[in-house]
Image 1: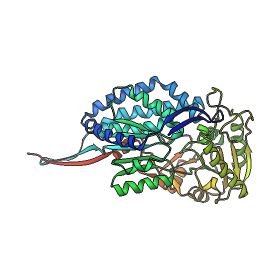
Image 2: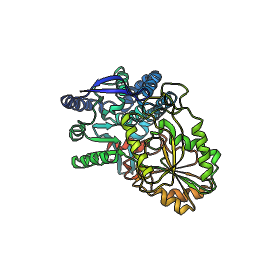
Image 3: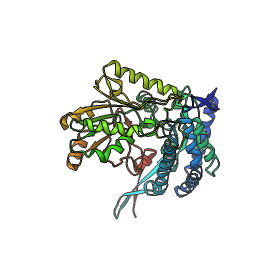
Image 4: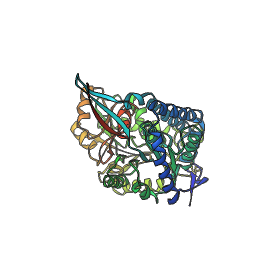
Length: 458
């Protein structure tokens, strides 16, 4: 069955079609991956780095083609798409530069009579299931450290970005990376059970909590490992002493970048009552100054959502909020000539905690804003969610920040305009947002069987 690639900027026009992977093809791919892994793990780590550094440089040469594909197919404004590709390459480079440091054998004890060595050995075959919102970076995140660790990868790209996924595959195929070490599969979901229950050795998944829990259950029953990045609803606390002028750009970026489709973006704005009106006014002004348009236009700041399906889902969340008495603080109009997955950037207040915009992940330009009077109330509001990936706090008081950070049920907390998402640090969360950790030495080791060898010394 053919899977269409559509353009959400131009009324969902079909750009390209790709034959989906069949069940028989998937079974063959699995067999090839098993065979390739036997040889790949025997290649010295230093040589694996060399192979993958060639892939890095090929991606570097194709940056503009990748960015244009992302803009056309996903709706990410072209300037942001270029940033997304560069962002992925930054992580790729860090992985290459640190693989030997974190994957080499490690001596844990050495005396006159004995030596204990930890070896990091591959899991073997990894199924990597990625979302559509950052198609290049998510491929890098799920594939490169996996391969450097000696595993082979079966990469499942989202049906919404098959054109970009296919371009990534073609670039990799043009390098000397051994055949079958990294393979891509395409389907709209029907073969997920076949892949998950097949003879694989690890699953990494980014997507909904319900699917992630289903995959984690399968992994547990199979006795294999998994890492899951699941839904979240990130709180942002703006304290009484916050300097609003210095943070408003960051507030805008973390909610409205990539047409509001960012996993670790701001989802719930919790503002001290003394700043409530100021934040609304300045954020509204910031949004007003931005241009909504087609993703391929250089002057576009805000593009469409990824698909008609995503637009429909967001519309349900929006309607639910209004039916439960939410009120519109601000809404930017959209030019009627634009045809596609466009939704007006909207600020909402009079928020009820039963609203979908409060307790679900909102992948779109709707931002609920709620005031608070004291820090205890703000922390309660921040923790009023089943998710706990990241959180943001704006204050000029470092001690107050650390106090708040210690009370928030979240795997990552950021102060002011810093960025907790860097290659060196673990990326992951609490509650229903995460299983395991990505990035840094932790991500390398997630993909490894850790073996201790104790040797007597003569």
